[in-house]
Length: 119
Image (cartoon, rainbow, N blue to C red; front, side, top):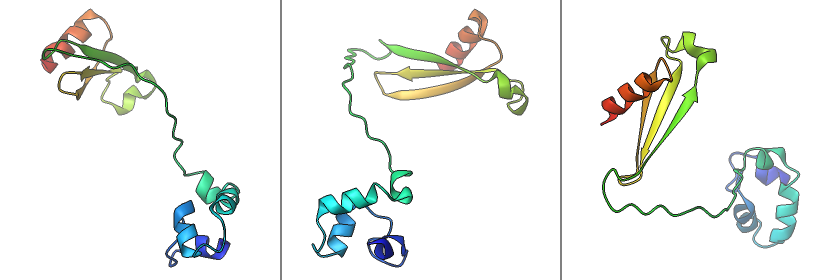
């Protein structure tokens, strides 16, 4: 299994449980392959973690009825961002669109300018 998994020219190289199972033509059980893959760093380090959790539904009846805004702090890297210290992100639920605006301050005037440029 190790040779098939580590060889880039092999069909099942760096794949998952199913690809190794098909390449082995059923000689090794899926459970054994899964247990073996848990010890392989190339498989466990880069496999995305899938977490299932319940989320609240958002029901919007009209355009621009509900927005969400968030402030991202970039003070530590402002010298690389032309002096911008914050990023304001907007999310519109009605059309499922995101917009990002750079801001130099986080006061009311900074928010107001960003919202006006977004609308």
